[in-house]
Amino acid sequence: MRVQSESISDFWTVGRKPVQELLLARPEQVDLVYIQDNVRSRSLGRFVDMCKRLKVRYRLVSSQDLSRLYGGNHQGVLARVFQPGFFDLDAVMEQSRAAVLPLLLALDQIQDPGNVGVLARSVLALGGGGLILPKNRTAALGPVAAKTSAGALNRLPVAHVVNLSRALEQCAAQGFVVFGATMDSQAENILRITPPFPAVLVLGNEEKGIRPGVLKHCSHRVYIPMPGGMQSLNVAQAGAICLGMFAKARHDSLELFSDSATQNRYAGQ
Image (cartoon, rainbow, N blue to C red):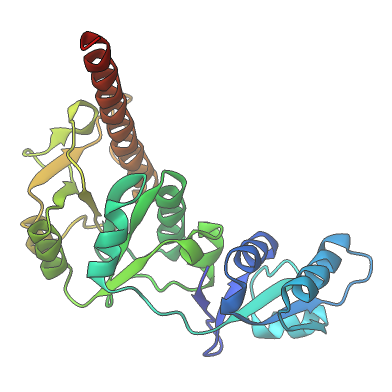
């Protein structure tokens, strides 16, 4: 949850679970932890103990002081982190190849930071390789994205790119197969595909979908069938379904490979 405050220029991690995960995973990223001075809260007291054990600076402050730093629901704890750097696209691709699910999620002008956070959480949960985000016209990785990601944005490699179309070209040149989630007539039913890996999945803007110029760089197009009569899904919901189908395909292919290897071994005896 590497986040930039909406009110000041520092970067923040917000909330008890996100701060705890950050402290346990990357304490070296933390500059200072602000903890609400509430002697009756055991959970907040544990943050003091954790900071002492990890040798991370902390400061006890009033609830009013915390609210001045961050106006949302801070749950009594904020962590100021050193300004995060984003990964080079080549580095993100390299890490994705080694991921449990060698899949990158590219977001084309998604505006709701809550959607970005939920999608990041889904990618991390399924073992995905990381995110590709355009630098412009995309929701900032601010407090809302940070909180809804539940720590995922601290742990996923994220590439910020100037031009998403060129980034997809670069991925394709490195052997990544690019899929676009769309409802057009050329799209395949995602329940029926067997995607190759490594891959990139592109999700589009909440209202307009994937821009035509970006869609041109998707060699495959997929859609989610909705026999129940729904006309559309929220992009975070649709993304989670698509990611789940890619994860299942990856799991099935590895199982098939394992079964084949076992059969060959016995056949040779």
